[in-house]
Length: 367
Ligand code: PLP
Ligand code: COI
Image (tube, rainbow, N blue to C red):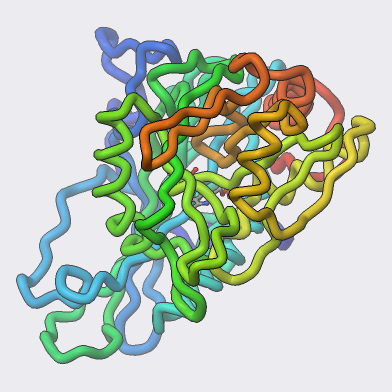
């Protein structure tokens, strides 16, 4: 990763905006995920085939022409990463260059311009630096949401020629209200056997906003059944496991951790990649392999699969208590509690992210 400088960023805000109001409770377990946005954003415009200088300033509502392409044809992509407070009081990001690269993978698929990696990284680092006081203490963190939208007014179906890239930051605790931050917890997961998320040749391996809107209906239905998340199978009728609406998924089967391979229809999660590298160093075998749902379900019922978890930036590692099927039956994973391997991975990952243990991988990037 190149050096981070502020050379292409303007900073313009009143000092007061960097300190949270005294009555705002930033304790991680008092924060609803995604609800509190810190006052500054980073923004940069793309016009006339070039990026203009980026700015850190108080965020404002976005003035869009009603014909703006994003509003009609969903030309919108985003990323998600976090800033963590380390024991010495310093602040670090986790593998931000991976987010920069994935953003541009999404941009290419959605016919959007690349966000220069340096602009992406400088913008985030400067923004976080200006809002250090908004970072909750561990086990909380500052969730960072870079977003790119096509802003040109045109109802013709084509790529926008103008874009807004912006980054907002949100103090956060646990993603799931059911689990406490700093602990794995477990949630019930609905298995979507008939509603798909991503098709072959589609956009499933990007963070296109539209990938999420197509999951909202089934997420709402799952919530009514007491499930916190939805696990999707492939959309081509093979009934293989893909991923959750906003997380990748791992299973412990016969002592080996397995996760679906990156077939192009699921997101290449940075947490997933980190766990594939971290697990072997903890003596846990891992394998990427095609996972047939019906076989997996049989293994859950027989106890051969005795741990399962969702993983992602927002969710970190969240254990799966049980799978709820469309026919209303429920299959408990192990005893429904978070298992020892899930715990071990959670602790190891978090200790690296929070600077509590050594980072042999070079994943932690100081702000
Ligand atoms: N899958 C989807 C659909 C996601 O939205 C996310 C979250 O970003 C993930 C997986 C996990 O990715 P990461 O670990 O990079 O956050
Ligand atoms: C993330 O983990 O960063 C995501 O974008 C997933 C979403 C469910 C918040």
